[in-house]
Image 1 (cartoon, rainbow, N blue to C red):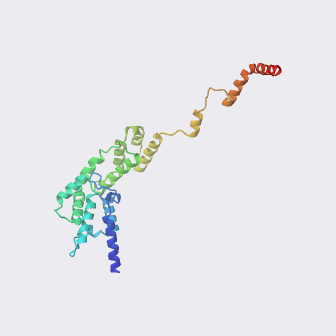
Image 2: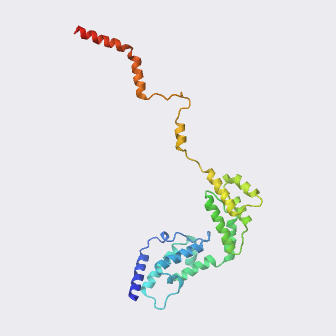
Image 3: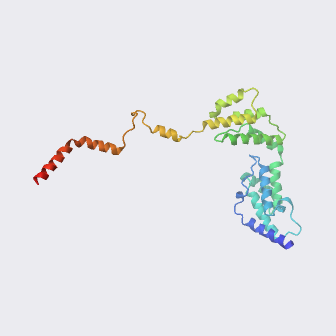
Length: 262
């Protein structure tokens, strides 16, 4: 049983070594500007657990650490650095001592991201009050605003529903000016879900509509033509030939005379 378990662990570690791009397994990049520590941390733990490497993050170096353990620790540590923003990499490396373990790197990241809630709240609040839509879709724009409001609430900076709606309106693209005024003047002010649905409907109405087959067929008809359909080309040719049939009988007569003469 022990040999079977050891073989399974070795197989998982071989698969971990073969991972060339950790972002293919963990697409979330930890960034203090986005404040996405929770989804990042969850995906990190799921991935290291998949390869039976969670002890490298959750526990210190075992007393009887093998050479393989140190090798795999370097791999997991490289995964951490490969999934955090560049500016955060620089800060964490400055905090880490030379030869630091994955566990030490994990704690350094945690300290930088979660260790100063007051500064995080101040930074996120400033972003919340200046964020604009730009070219973002309404779905992503509203989701991002709601996410910032939720994180501020976790940092003991509660955002009221009214403040959330007014900031969403403030940062909207100018093409939503009409619906923005309608939402702003509504009494009572619409809820987040109601305002988002109204904006989604407005965005849908703005989408360019493609020509339907019936429209394309209609545009191909000559409205100024007679109600009778024009004759097919081969009929026109035959009619043109009959128009020149005035010379037809004389041609036949010449042929008959020639025949008699023969």
